[in-house]
Image (cartoon, rainbow, N blue to C red):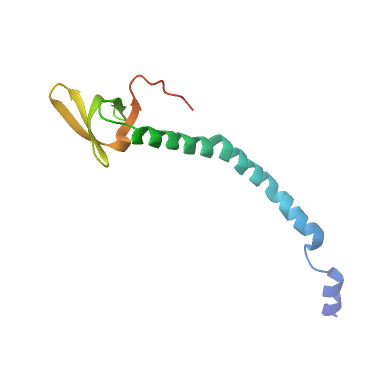
Amino acid sequence: MFADLAWAMGQPGGEAGGQQGLASFLPLIIIFGILYFLLIRPQQQKQKRQKEMVDNLKRGDKVVTLGGIYGTITSVQTNFFTLNIAEGTEIKIRKQAVSFIQGQVMDED
């Protein structure tokens, strides 16, 4: 008796169920695409430009650190710069601590 009832009901989902499942995920896929192009991708491009800028710095460039210290690069090591911030005063900073080069216009993303 129960076997006949089970065959009469058929399988749950079927053809229409698969299409309905995909349609329910479509808004989530669209939202993720919008977030990617509005938030994630621009941040990745900004990080790439910052890395290129830091990699191209050389002795004599005038920079500003993330802490707001203005200085001139006097020495370049693998992971560090030595900055001259005042006459006779030099500090050693990590390369990632350089915010931008003095005189360059910062582009606000």
